[in-house]
Image (tube, rainbow, N blue to C red; front, side, top):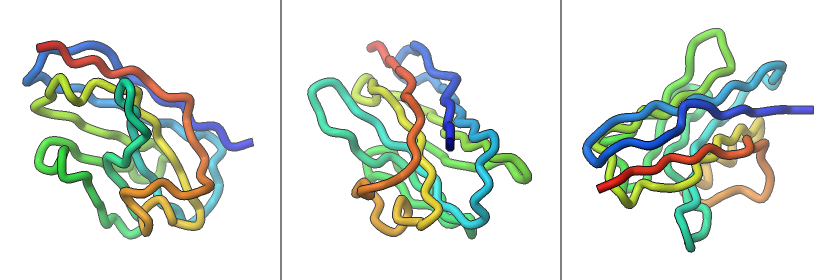
Length: 126
């Protein structure tokens, strides 16, 4: 059973920073893509950032230059560093992992299958 666990969410004022993490203990697939998606109030889930196995990245236009996705070498831990946060970034953030790499290839669309965490709340106040 693949389990992804997000942590590090919370509340911050506009202009502030947060880093959310996603741990995937026991995730043994060798080649992967990882991604962060979010669901804002009253909206559908949308792609935020994606990371391919070779280090390539993709970002939603709304977060380019402000958010950075990364992976800790040797560990199955994915990060999303969020700077210059805006109230419209308020959402539940989900991390995903996909051994077939469609999370990256189809980004910002969501693939029909991926492993997902339970989600973590990020709230940005004005």
